[in-house]
Amino acid sequence: MVYAQPDVRPTLSIILVNWNTAELLCRCLETVLASPPGQEAEVVVVDNASIDDSVARVRERFPQVRVIQNPANVGFARANNQGAHECSGDVLLLLNTDTEVREGALEALTDFITSHDDVGIVGPRLVSPDGSVQSSCRTEPGLLNALLEALALTRLAPRSRLFGRPEMTWFDHHSALDVDYVSGACLAIRRELWNQLGGFDEGFFFYGEDADLCRRARQAGFRVAYFPEAEVLHLGGASAARVGPRKAIEGYRAALRFARKHHGRAYAVAMEAVIALGTALRLVASLPRRGDAARAQRQAYWAVLRWLFRPGARPGAPW
Image (cartoon, rainbow, N blue to C red; front, side, top):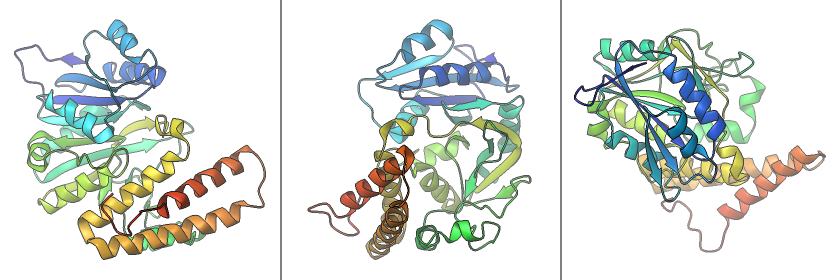
């Protein structure tokens, strides 16, 4: 990694938001620092009030990394906004702590976005530890996607352009493509566009901020691109896995906020109904199953239904 000197403006600013993932964070930083982007760069870690030794370990092992320590968990979107405010690179790379950067990925992403003036956001190919390709790019949240998932049609014919639409499972992920949005697990964006858009919408606490940012980028006239020549290992959900049923609730909360923000109240009401239907169907289907995993699933489904129908909830209300 080539580090920018205090009086030199870096080309690339890498931002990681951490919440109790000390071991993963350190491993991620090792791969980042071992994968030089070919330009001046800086790295910032924003810690969301971790109770493990994340901050101490980063400061001890990576003194060249700047650390912002929050007294409370302010959410993924707001923490990334904090990090971006402290950075000065022409390109911002938002990176999850449960990732490992493969050789050449940083340089490939930076070169791609700086050499294509009409590209505002670019994401790499994300792979699992077993080498399988993840759904690194998707179509944005909406009623059709929600209905396909509620009725389990996405599993019926994943290679179909219709049924495989939500996570683009029809796409082999081996070629570059303009998409609705790329995963926030690893996302590069032009600094000027980030400033123009005002960064992430902080109303999204943990999920949905990537889809919202990419939609606003496309509305501003920029392309959102998936670029598989850059590859990043993604373990997936390391922080979210610690919060149990809340993971499911936050995911649906984000989808409903996206629906209300971009399509209006009536659309959000319809989304709520579809989400409730899908959750109820999955709950019923899980009843015959036994074991800890099945019980955990049922707890999550019940939590979502209680949240949707909690006292005082108003259909289509802002989330």
